[in-house]
Amino acid sequence: MGRIEETFQRLKSDNDKALITYIMAGDPDLDTTGFLIETIVKAGSDIIELGVPFSDPVADGPTIQAASARALKSGTTLKGVLSLVKKVRKKVDVPIIIMTYYNIIFQYGLKKFTVDAVRSGVDGAIIPDLPPEESSEFVGHAREAGLATVFLLAPTSTEERIKKVTGSASGFVYYVSMTGITGGRLANMQEIKEKIPQIQMHTDLPVAVGFGISGPEAARKISRWADGVIVGSAVVRIVGDNRGRKQLLSKVGKFVGSLKGALV
Image 1: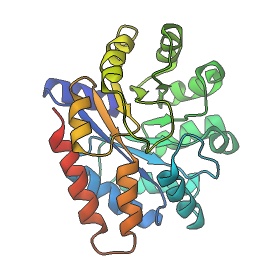
Image 2: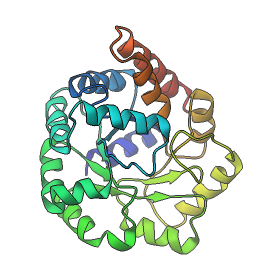
Image 3: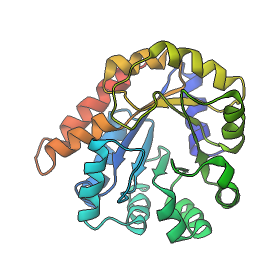
Image 4: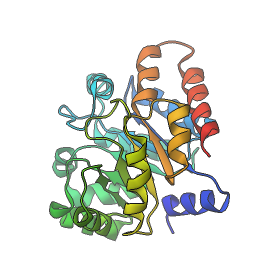
């Protein structure tokens, strides 16, 4: 059993929900990212979603696009991010999931990435621009290496689409709460409430909800229905606004703690 499955099982037995926190690796630099990971875990995050910067992040809104640009400017590469994970693994036990785009993984080498990622301590990968129809080679390498493949579903996903995505997914299913990019405004809570059981009819995997969750109030509402809540842009914005300042870690830690404390 991997760290992701263990984490969701432990939380379920504790009648708790998973807080999944996204940060961009290399924003403002990889050394700071290491400290941020430790801070976020101490504040209560159950899973870390670690972005690898890409020049054309089509699923991301302005906040994460800006973080990606800063990370690229600081010289962040996939190889450097894997080295960082290997380093922080000595201090944190929570699952770490890489989120990036297919071109980076393809250029690195599909099989090489899955093997190197697992050896570094990575537990899963999210590749928003890799549809399940074209993922068989990557999923095959990932399963052989022991890397979870987390796929996305959206409000527009049909029953047929849900079956296809859940058939390729492992670790958990990432439900995008709205049609749009990260950092948008969360609009339709009723739609989220109705969509989660629809997904759960087709899979035993946990369902985590992301996109548009900007604070504790929204996190609390969604945690009533979902197995996990994913918060990215709101955390990345704090990092961006406070980079280079002494209060960076304390501000991020306080916010993440407020999110975890809000889950029901």
